[in-house]
Amino acid sequence: MSNRDVELYHQMADGDRKALENIYSKYERLLYSFVIKLSGDQTLAEEVLQEVFIKLWTKKASYDNSKGKFSSWIVTITRYTAIDLIRKNNNKNYTLEEETDLPEQQTETTEDIVEWKEEGMKVRRAINKLSDEQIQMVDLFYYKGLSQSEIADRCGIPLGTVKGRIRLALKHLKKHLSAGKGGVDDA
Image (cartoon, rainbow, N blue to C red):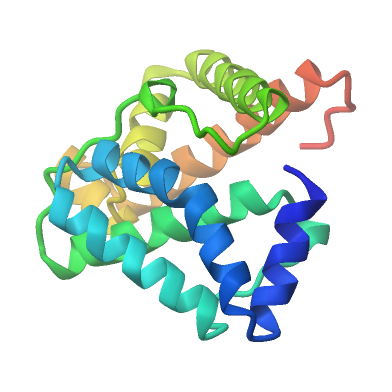
């Protein structure tokens, strides 16, 4: 991420339409491709993009640079918006493919692209170290967007077990990811 993203965000928050256009130009293809991979539905992808940029413009979603990169934040906003619309349309048959299949942005720097791919590989390696049950919970909850209750129903297990497996999976992911950074395991 560049400081330019943060500058554009703040300019847009101050009512600068050109800054919104610049953010849209930079992220539109990435976000559209992300939603297509998540849902397989072009119409839904267009609707999600519209919703995301309306949220940005109307300040219903606000970015705090102390909590992470702008690019990660906007992808997260897009993911949650897509999941909300999928649930609203009551169609839960969407799957998320690997993000490495997304087309590269011309406006993304080589450093950004390399960083995204490296982070994605680290996360996938960490997920692969989880137990089969935990991998299933992560997939259903984070990638397929099911609620914990829906996971319990689908898997035929108690809701408390689902919550415990997700919590344990997150604890193990945190441990594996912090170990990869040379950090201390505080999980």
